Image 1: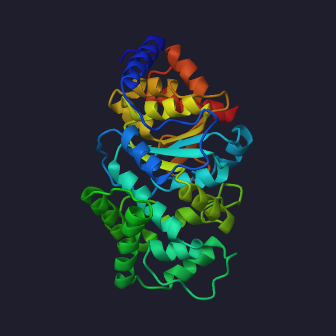
Image 2 (image 1 turned 90 degrees about the vertical axis):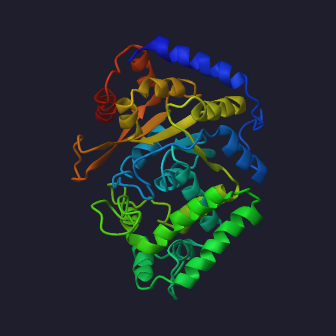
Length: 375
């Protein structure tokens, strides 16, 4: 692979020419990011920023990272509020979003199935009156009577476990999800998207709160379940999940209602998706505060695409506090004994080292974030 500044600059220049030849109808307001996207703007953003559907080896309906909250206390100290959140994958993004409270969020994933997952969540979150109602809808089970609004997450899941799955309730909730997206929002869902949403929802119904990363079709898994992930904490005894309190869930619901969590389809190293987000943010005068990449960079190195990703990151509007959140599996030590370790890294700092030719291997990226964490 060609390394260093020349590749990144060249890729930025090529992409700038490509974007200038398109006619993106979604334009940011010069005064800043909008307080709300209309339904039409939301869907056009998805369509115009997205790349063709790609492939990943799993459905990835549930995260397999059980230490992802551990970095939140440090993020709250490091990251300036009011920026824009970028992420990948399913609902672990919601926990970061409710903790950091960005102005806007873009979730970019190579699979259109992830977009369909987020559309399912969007409908269910907006339809739900509170956390217990949301869990009842997500798993198509009757809401247990007598739950207080202040109920702890463990109480919510204990009461949920006592309720059997209900096929009639599932059929009705699926109808409500699709109707909410099509009629309430007016999104022109085609049969592919409707089928994808049905597939995702059917897996949550079939597996219940035990659904995990490796068992989207049901069965046992060595990874943490959905319930496990909602009951974990930040390593300091504080549960910061989006279901940890009604306040957190309300923050998430408001952002969904305002169409400010935008899922798009794109390869991190692709020619369009991240660059379209960057152009939109630059036009609004906004900056990226956090970019959660999970362990996508591992696959980019395997496919010899990390340099193109670095060039895409170089096209984003950043500030010195802009921070990567990335995950390391198996090869990084964790004090908790977890297979997954969550790391932080300076986005501008990594780009500077990439430009200087110091990032040649995936281990260089992990070492860069581990060195930063230890300082």
